[in-house]
Image (tube, rainbow, N blue to C red; front, side):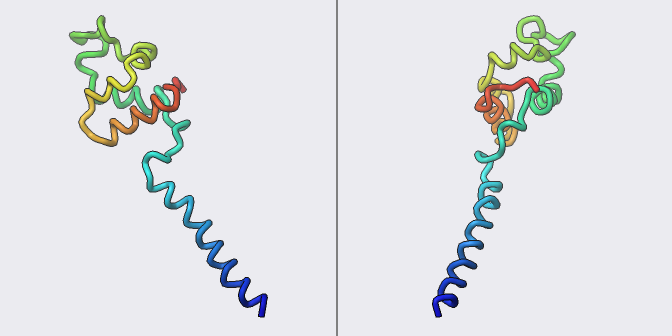
Length: 103
């Protein structure tokens, strides 16, 4: 009888453990920030959205060169004023929270 009582609790416990990671994966705040870097994530976003002005030949390149990692790192969350989508803003936020890694 004791074995039969233990078995359902054990099975339910396994089900709860398996659900934990899946719930975390759906939460954008829980995404591994270590995977976000300037080279892999931020630079391509800047090239796509800021190419005409903040890169060589652009109007404000001399003032704010976005190809310079240190300039972009210093701007940090201020970059989000340039991005319209929550996905882009979230990416920048995760990068800053991870310490703004270059690679």
